[in-house]
Length: 269
Image 1 (cartoon, rainbow, N blue to C red):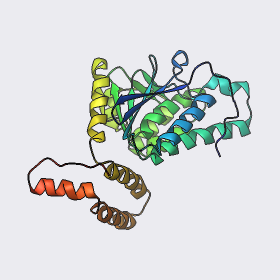
Image 2: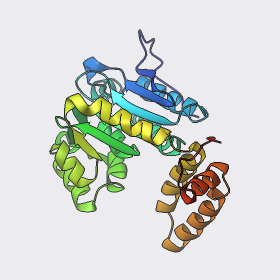
Image 3: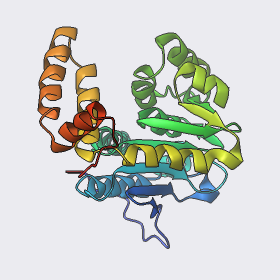
């Protein structure tokens, strides 16, 4: 069970939620003066929010963003140094890993909306999101190595999204890359001007939200499950899931509409 061992009394939430569009919720990391650094409180609150959303059938897509000029500066190093205890660090990184796993386990797709800097565990959040769109002024780095700390947990997400050479170079040099390079590396999907970021992300979210929820949720689960399987097992599992998907009422309606050359009348079962 994940517990918050810090238990600070917060003057305001470190994670905000708002409905951006029907079926689309926007989650905002809310420590703008700290560049949304991942304090223990913020991680615990984010984990709680994700767990709550996982059972909310009214939500189809999640947008993850940061308040203020940065997306996320990674772990709160100042907070970490106040109690330099290895067991406490293990608990903190276990909590962070639980957040990352909750993002993958979440039935709804997550779109990272990135502006400003996304560093270390902040870059990990981007890599761990299902989709990511950034403003052209965004920059990305896993810069722990510059402090003598290899970004071990971010390396898990990076190595599963980028080519090994690109991921290893970022991890070993700590150098920043710009948004266009992040697209090239496969860290993000698109880079757009700042004044188009919100509309681009919301358009993508609305597009996904317009699809039958049962197929989207089953598809996301299958996508991540097959990545960890052998090729033969992946095809076996994918075939079973696809056959099951074929029995959904919305799938039957979609195929009939295609054959009859009409717009499908989704029931969103």
